Length: 556
Image 1: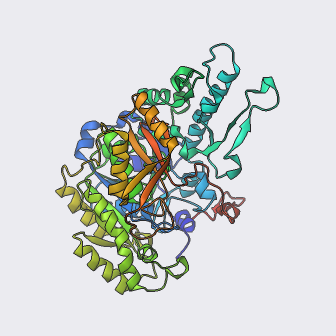
Image 2: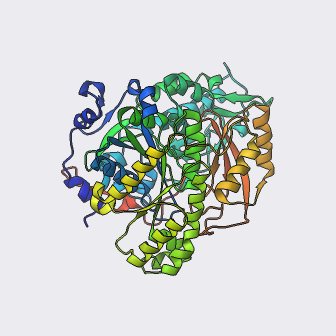
Image 3: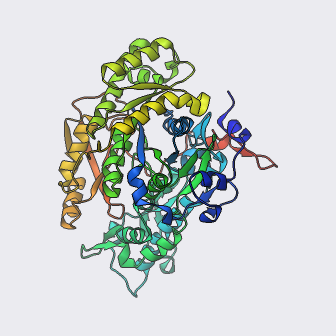
């Protein structure tokens, strides 16, 4: 089959006003970004309509390093729902340039389940991530200016400032830097660094804010550090929130595009799932539900990371009530968790599939904690054999869950009709299934340990001296009511990326805790997590090109 970009480029793309009309919007309702992209003003969010719409979450089993096609499945499912006569919209995250130029080479779905124009979506899109960069770095500039200035100096202790600048690129050389060198006119020397833009708290805030006033309030609540007298300093103390919000004015509006089959697609926000909440914005999800009967959305990585944060952070703070959950699984991931090496995943191995099902079993169990019996979407690859597929079907039946083979990569919406029908049945039978895993009023350790023990299967949780001190600080600041955002590897249910399958009786070690009070959560860090990734030895950027006619190649 042709490459993703070739398929996308040969597809006839509709003017974005045609997509808007299918949702009940007129051309003048949109903020147009050319012919094929538009922003939808927040005034079209309708809380009454939201209560009547259905929300479907797509999550996954623990992925292989290549990923299991969660975005492709989400897009294909939305197309499949439209094929069977439902008014469906897919709502997903924006790709970050770091992964696009690093490993992924694109993140707009695949095959015949893509969002278009894929080149624009994968590159600058409508400039939302650039706006996040500017707002984040404005705060950085105001912090360093306050350190330098005598007038209005807040007495910040430079050693306590953890706020960093950001850039939307993988660049390991920027992780740790020294600024302010050169003389007294060039600032106060201090150690700092860069994070990738998707890891910025500003990105997390953009995705949690429900209007401009809420956005300003959250930006003002960003915790910066302490004075020399150990008093906390927030962005509001620098009077930063107004200007930061002004930079994010357009970025607050969700982006409307389309799938290859003309299904409406709203793409907005892109916080990382192994660091931040890993879901698109609340306003994007609400917009989709305001303008369609059923919304398909996704959460980053597997259920232990993305789905957990979607339920406990996004749903608890927004009041959104999901109606069904889909877990994406693949034969190759089952074999991988059954002990097969990456270079042998294309070979038939029924025994490894059987052994690796323990991982999927845990993710099925995870969803029952929230009140859902999930549907398994087996994302089919050409090398999958009938014996392997039949075994997965039998194992799913033995665990009381429905399974559909998803062929949307090859066949588009037609290949996801069986999945769509199962999802529709699930949404009709679920009126109030959802229960959060924890109450926000619980103390921080109880919330952390509930996630670790129930979602990961850990036996114990250990806290470093540093993380314990931060927990004490959180209590002294009256922030115990914040949600927990666990940061750990996506490659294992544990914090050790080498542990495949379903690890048991392990200990989660919390090495650090960060305060993201603007976003409404604390970040509890287990294992080694990079906020600034590096490029691989052979980055995708080496292959991406453009010709004289403006045609871009090698995005995939």
